[in-house]
Image (cartoon, rainbow, N blue to C red; front, side):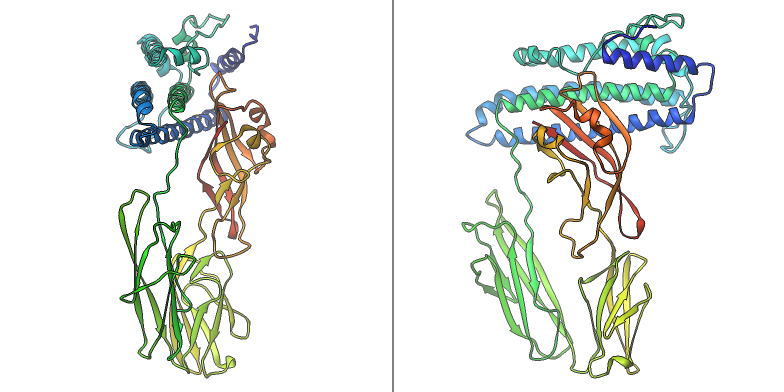
Length: 511
């Protein structure tokens, strides 16, 4: 069989050569797993592209309320809504076909963990060829593409030849097995898992088409505007363990404040003025009595001019001159997998008479008044100090080190110049704003999926890349250009203690 020049046809023909050779054999586990990897990547890509479309629709809604963009948004948002409605219909229809095929192959919908015959070739032929469901699918995809391009005739002409929905029948010379039509070419004697992957590919085609048109409609109005809608108070104290007569100092403010909308802060029941940095500083001398708490109330206006109130409190403990004392050297929390350093004193008792125990990990002494604790179970830990025969217990929270953020260059997703993205060397995992210094994660693998501009035949997928380098995916990166969407998924990283974490996916829109 001669191989055509067109890449998509090469791929399909080669696939059917492999499938034909396998008809007399059992489909190997490696082939089944390969189809699963591609199918999972396509499913993840569909979710990311769908999220991108929802972000653009949300921006449309904001532009309808902006006097400077309202008129144009009234024209183009209904077109975007129509594209979403059309895509939702065909996407859900294909999702129904996938479930129908799985049930036919033995899947139990009532049990999400049930298995089905992934390597069987009869079910796909029966449904899509014999029952002519494949012909119905082709008809619906054809109608969808036609309706999508008809939403706006001018833009339709622009995208008529570039939408990733290719409905041409693969031209195969070997027709001994009945591969003569569109349905036969895609589904005749095709293993169940391969047919499911092909259906996911069609879903990816329609989701990508939807996103490209919705984005083009939005560009007729203006670029996406991201609004900050979360405010967090900044509250801190100079110490939470004091002796009688010592001064307690509390600082409070609000992140991302404007000098034209300064917050009003009440600490301990009285209003406290703000300094030049927008922070209120409260000072008071504590008395004996074991401790107490100081309420903090912050009132401010958000970006929409609405009044907001945040309340918090600062708890503190008043010790005695001869009392034992324990503090976390670096944090108020003990972290699993890290050397948590504690400073310990027995008050009036010498260090040689002080011992330390913990119910969640065994402390080890590293110097006078210095201990390392390595807890093993998240939740809490009680550190007990025995100073000259008198014991004092101190409670700590125990947490795992948070997941790092995957990064490419200075970005973890969103819009990025194509030239900048293609110049990056790989992926790293950063722990942002973590209190411990020197804690690192190493990326050990990922999957890359590219759709849109540069990939007219559908998604370009490179699953199971080992390491963090972009070296193994240069064949995909060379095709990337403005208009390409790149999804990096299945990111794995190894951190403290040798534990492997699966990190969140990243999606980049190149321009």
